[in-house]
Length: 453
Ligand SMILES: [Fe+2]
Image (cartoon, rainbow, N blue to C red; front, side, top):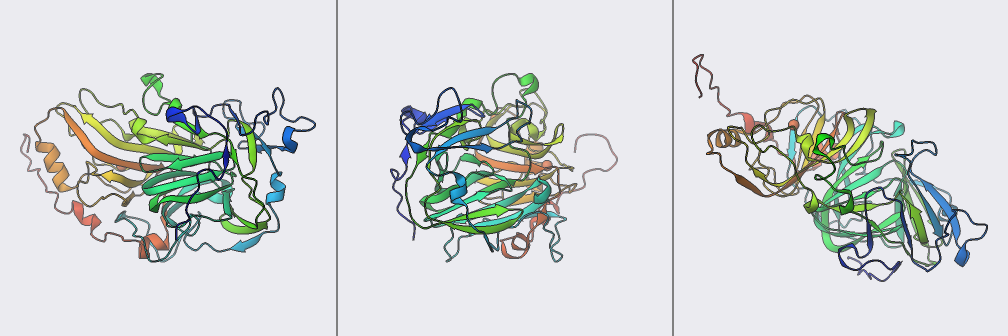
């Protein structure tokens, strides 16, 4: 059963009314917020005694000595220090949540794959038990690579909390509404929005409207940032003001509680005597955010040709090699197609990067059939892919005028590392065995004679 959610359960800081109610705009801003007046120290971080009897604590998202433009940390003023939210640890098993390196000897990852939406079952799932890993890449222990997951969530976490020391989570809902009640405040999330939950941040996930399905990119490496726009300039694509961090919210609840921690690919539980969501005030630039994908302003071809899909990058997580991302999060949304004398859908392609796609809603232009909302496809490192025959013939013979590509929102998690399928993805999830056949009827047109065929 879904737990009824009381939105007033946590005491929230006052904030602006209107579209930013409950949130503060900006990406990587130096935010500050307090749920009780005067709880946030001014002019210093660590007073001898904090007001209200709060404990001061720093959450470091980067090394102390990271370059200034990348340095992220947040100061929390809380009812208990985090050491009170951590006791002895006991290992537990979450059988569907896998971490890299994870290479199943019975699974062939080399191939072009596509899945129907992973269906809900009779079984109820929380955020933790409902996380079903599809692919892993890199190595969680050396903090490179990623995992892709499909989540199926029916039940709220009750007196149960979670954090991942391994990763930040990029959450892409496809169905249902979730609430992330975090140490730093509340994020409500619905399809066509995304959220970034930072590494180390404690939270619980509640179901506002279920059942819920969506996608998660678990980033083991350097944090997501906004891509450089280069000659595009200071505007368009994802604009920083459209990201929203929550205002402070806390609860003062002394009840037996469980905190689950993901650490080096394994899960551990610790029992504590209170809610860990007890941060009354905070300031800093290491915070969860949400973003409305409908505010993404696509930039593209306005005369001819089809630019590389990197033109649609929403967020990028660098790998240390300039221009070669650990992960790019790329969005294919509604837009106008106006290119003249051009094959407009994505071209045929082989890529050193590995491309995992998900469909949020509608039809994707290179695959009008078979890639359905909730579905996933994988075109792994150096595996050829591209339009099916119908998409090719349609786009090759279309009368080209301005055309609105409507009712479409798909995304890609693209990584420099090959992606390995889990046993769940290969054996249990609804794999479309005939996906590879979508290219089988592409004809040979060449006959040695010149001219357009
Ligand atoms: Fe591609």
